[in-house]
Image 1 (cartoon, rainbow, N blue to C red):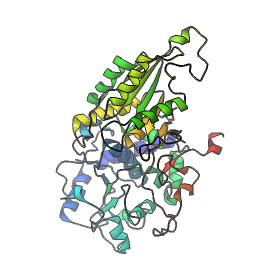
Image 2 (image 1 turned 90 degrees about the vertical axis):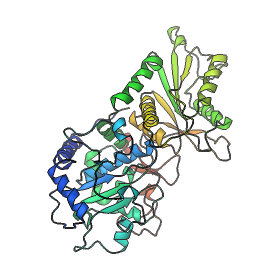
Image 3 (image 1 turned 30 degrees about the vertical axis):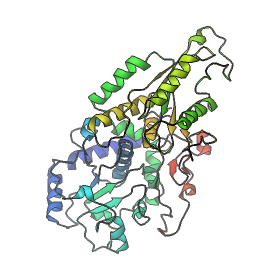
Image 4 (image 1 turned 180 degrees about the vertical axis):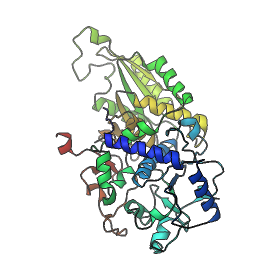
Length: 449
């Protein structure tokens, strides 16, 4: 399933490109803004029409990709340039998205200690707003917005900021998040009209923006095409299975049982050695149909087990099932270039499958499905190492889940009172895998229209 960007969104993307070229790293406005930041100048009248949202690199690759797409949307909504902290791998993973400029934060960025900013910082959104330091006369060298999945309720007030009270006078805003925070922008009344024009359908925000913003480097793409040409291109159908184990790196039988229960329940794989539930194809040509299973995960045991199962007991309906896995790194390694390149290649390979099973809570799985516009079958998180019932659920949309949304109403900003934001607007619902998370979807009435 695919979605195309609307003419209005294309126009907004072109405007953002212009802003990035005019104000991005290396330009005269950027140099001047950097000098103000270095010197501590807080002259709110001298921003030259160039304000900045700096995204700080944080946690695993899936987290960082979700954060990057979210920050890009926030930058467009607030007319800010998006420089991205490169960490140790960004330049090796993605090409420059904006023509004629760079989105990489320069290595000589003048703010000392900016990578260590946290919720306790004096410049955090919570401390600035609760300290009533937002009036017309307030001046800020910068403001830090902390929106990871465990952010305090007061810091989540940033979701409801109208960007008119004081943030529009702050030239530098720093953002740290490990989540797909885009759904929560739809709770802010100030942004709703603009978001409706950008995204008439709400179930493909990540898909549309990621296809504009994220372009893997030649090194990553070579990994993708090499594996595709060797193992995938001749199959009639591909099934992706993304495996993430939360109880450690060693393999578990109940995880394998859950994978097989899910694929059997949803008729994604034929039952080996016995007649399939669906009648076998009557067509002679269909009996030789091939299905390739692409598994991804840190451990190769699940791949080996599924492959051996079909080697010993071929599918009774005549389908030829082959199983492949690009890598098995055994342990997750943060900010290691080669490890991240392999992970990104596997996300793109998953995005090319026809159907996909993902692991609940996994940002890797969210990205792999959403990049390809795929609505995944999500495996629920086991409790006490017992296969859940049901083992998986079909997602309501291809959109990733926001693990840490605000729990208050934006119009009131009563952050100490719980408000069920999963019911606040029709296109925002609670996630299948994380009951307190929210995700974008297309309401049934709109789908049927």
